Length: 315
Image 1 (cartoon, rainbow, N blue to C red):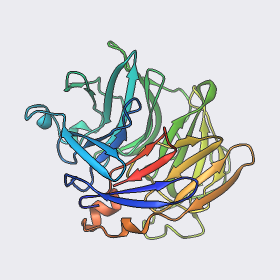
Image 2 (spheres, helix red, strand yellow):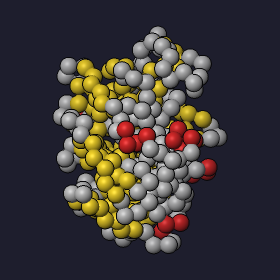
Image 3 (tube, helix red, strand yellow):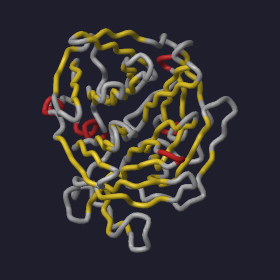
């Protein structure tokens, strides 16, 4: 935070901090470059992109956007940032911008350092569960100021000429930002941001209760981990031990047979074979946060998972 990078290693939970050469704006978003291991940062409130290279206890920063590309759009606290690479062509994808851009994704080609606008989604893609599966962008849920929340599953092939497809299944219950990742056979996993509810998601006995933002720890408030099929059908796998929401990042992460759900308040991992949970406290270094209360609520730190080493880094 401020100019600090905080790194937490799993499964040990060991934490370390180091200084960054730049001050990343609060509410920015981050993702790892899967080929180089660098951290790519999208600045909150602009389309400026930075590359952070971390080696040992030293970090270097390089701005990838020129003045024009840094002002193509305004990213927001609900924007998701994803890495995509096919045939050696690497890019990052941003899901949604404020106001009329709530349904608009953008793609930044890392070789040409230029943005291009992708087709507008049928429904809002801000504050969604978002991930890349093969050559397709998958969006589950979303929110816009004009229309509120929805639980549709939307897919966009990222090849030129790709068009959005909306799954035919019923909408997933959606109250607060969730996160997702791809699985085997077209299945994906989605952690639903905490909601006031009763029953099992996907069953006839499930129902949403009246919204109450002050009751995250109430008996009727919970987050659910679900399996979502390619046709949009879904079923609950388990209830997360602690209710949480996923403002900082719309992705879940696989480490072996565990699905890591890293939210605003907790780190929780679900073992698929045994259907058991384990958890870690968030690094205490993240509490030293000078962001205003709204930015903290909506995700003040840029966060990414370093998959090559099984590490999670949060700034």
